Length: 170
Length: 280
Image 1 (cartoon, helix red, strand yellow):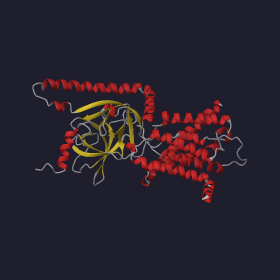
Image 2: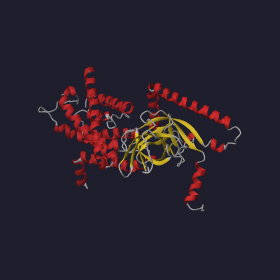
Image 3: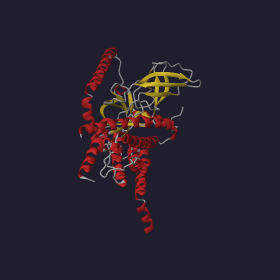
Image 4: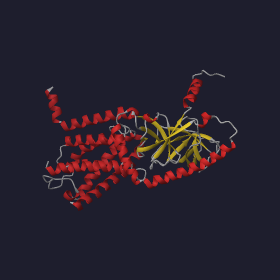
């Protein structure tokens, strides 16, 4: 990991947690869509981050969110799940030429198509798992699915907007 | 033994995954049930302080709307005051029961953390706690005078309030026209609506009727506004009634805590009756 990477990780961590807790914590659109922009921190970790490092980071990040959301364990569990699946999704989506050595996950490095596939899949899985845990009840399946779909679209669009915002600056 | 360790080392990623998930599930199962006493809820001291700081910043941007709410509230109170003064003149000669006059004690508090988007149990945190004389079970009204919830647990400086948007809280209400008793229950997900249950078919219920507190529970004075009936469907066996809640849970700023000073007396009398100590 290069010096710049570590700085970027810390910056993203601060940025996304602050964004989540101040701006998006109590936003609920159309009764179903809430935004979990803080998981972008895990999504945007460098490609070659070890899965166990990512899981420990996810666990810590999730616990932090749990304290603010009064949902002990739910965010943490979903984040660990996300970090665990991340590596598998990255492997699944390997482009023909493979990833470059110091590849960072972003639209400008890997292209919009790859990025949307990657982010949409992981965000959907995370949200579905999260709402399933929160509802703790399969009889609400339709509501869980609706929340998952709407919230995924919400989070994904904010994340992509954010990607273009940094691209222009950088 | 060494083989076992080798096995875990070989599958260390998966092992770590299951270990962490195990911890998470332990937290979910053991703490979510006992939310009131848990360390992890937002009335915890540090989170409480941070939430307070955050709400101070956010409130700055909401000043104009809060001002408006307060102004409306002032107007209402002024109206009540004039009515009260008129009454006082009329009743100067009649002796008033002083304990009833001051039966309810009001305290204001600020909402510092709020949730509306959970599935089944929404809570908000306020900046007054047991140091200010708040007890679990105290009723909470919003600035507009609508019912907001009840205090679930207190720490020194903060209290956790379980809002009306909570599937576990059923709330006795009354429909003002005709004095019909019923139960209010929130079934989600819309934070502006709740259902009213157990209204007998022989009653007539109209859209637009006012829903008020019933006074059967000691949390609130009778006649506090809860909401208005939004639509009524008759499915043949019973009414399906939706009410629009008076409290806007998406824009909470200040709340009033209502403490019934005669609660102890009333509860002990009712408990005696329930235990059969009072007979005809």
